[in-house]
Amino acid sequence: MVAREITKDVFWVGALDFDRRLFDELIPLPEGTSYNSYLIRGSEKTALIDTVDPKKEEELIVNLIKLGIEQIDYIIINHAEQDHAGSLPMVLEMYPRAKVVTNEKCRDLLVALLQIPAESVMVIKDGETLSLGNKTLQFHLTPWTHWPETQVTFLVEDRILFPCDLFGFHQATSELYITNEAEAYRSAKRYFAEIMMPFRNSIRGYIPKVRDLNPAMIAPSHGPINKNPKFMLDAYEDWVSDTVKNVVVLPYVSMHGSTQILVDHLVGALIQRGVEVKPFNLSHTDIGELAYALVDAATVVVGTPTVLFGPHPQVVSATYLANALKPKMRFASVIGSYGWGGKAAETIVKMLDHVKVEVIEPVVIKGLPDEAAVVAINRLADDIAKKHKEIGIV
Ligand SMILES: Cc1cc2nc3c(=O)[nH]c(=O)nc-3n(C[C@H](O)[C@H](O)[C@H](O)COP(=O)(O)O)c2cc1C
Image (cartoon, rainbow, N blue to C red; front, top):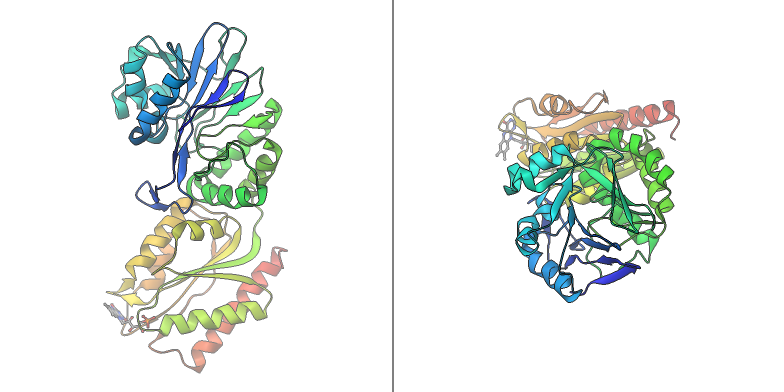
C-alpha cells in the first residue's frame, strides 16, 4: 500500500481490504472495504486520525515509515470500534510519546476494548480545538451515529471533515476519491441501511451542523474520499427523513412451495395496483440488499410457513434484523401457509416492536393456496394500495 497526499501535508495512510467478504460476522461485503487512516503534518505537531483494522496494522506502519514520520504527537480516535481503533496499541508502541485524543465516552471504550491506559488519553469536549501549528483540528461529538462515543473531526484550514463511519461506505478501490457518484450513492445507501439506519433520528440532527461547517471534502474511514459533500449530505437528508416510497418489501421463505405461491400472487397483485414490490427469498438473499430496500419502503410483508408452531427460523432472523434496523416503514403484514396450527403471524407481528407500524390483516392459509387464498391475497394488495394512497405516495 502507498500513502497518498490529499492536500498539502494531509495524507491517506490507511489500508485496502479487497478480499474481505463479511463484516461483523453478519454483513456481506460485495466490494470489500477499506480502513482509512489520515496523517496531518502541521508546522508544529503531527496528528494521526484513526487507525486501521488490526489485521492490516503493518500496512499502516509501513505507510508511516515510508512517509518518514518519526514522531506522532496526537492520535485522534473518532470511534472506538476495532476496525478503526484496533491498531492503536501497535501505533502507541511505535510512537510512545503520542497522546490519544478523544472524548470521555470513547476513552472509556478504548480502555475496555483495547486496554489502552486511561492516562494516555487526552479528553476533549464538544467544539474544542487542537492546534498543530498552521493547522487546527476541531472536534464535534456526534453520539449515536453508530455507537454512543462517535465523534467527527474537522480540519479547519483545509475544510476536511473526518467523520469516521458516518458518510462512508464499504468499498476497496484504488481510487482515492469518488469518481462515479451514481455507484457511490448505491454503496453509501447500502452502508447507511446496514449501519446507520437505526440512528436516523440522531443523524438528522447533525446534518445541519455538518452543512454549517461547509466541508470541502468528506474523508470517511471506509471507502473513497468525497469531494462533493453536498451529494452525500442531500442523500443522507433523504434517507433519514420520514418520507417513504410506494414500495413493498417482501422477505420470505417457503419450504414446499405454498408460501411461494402466495408470494408470487401478491407480487402480481401489487404490480397490477401500481405498487412497487421487492421480494427477497431469504434462503439465498444478501441481507445487505434487504436492508437497502428497507431504507424507504412504506410496507413490509413477511412471508413464512409455520415451523414448529412459529415462523421459519430464517424469517425470524430477518425479521429480528429488520426490527433492529428501525426502518421508517409505516405498514406491515404477514402471509404464509401452515399444516395444523401455530402462531407464526402473531410471533412476527410481536417481533416488530421497534418500528411504529400499522398492521394490515395477515393472510395465513392451511396447506396449498386455493381460490379463497387468492381472494385473500387480492384483499391484502387492495389494502396496501389503499394505505399507500391515503398517505399520498401512490
Ligand atoms: C419441519 C417442519 C415443521 C412444521 N411445523 C409445523 C407446525 O408446527 N405447525 C403447522 O401448522 N405446520 C407445520 N409444518 C407444516 C408446514 O407449515 C406446511 O407444510 C406448510 O404448508 C409449508 O409451507 P411452504 O410450502 O411454504 O413451506 C411443518 C413443516 C415442516 C417441514
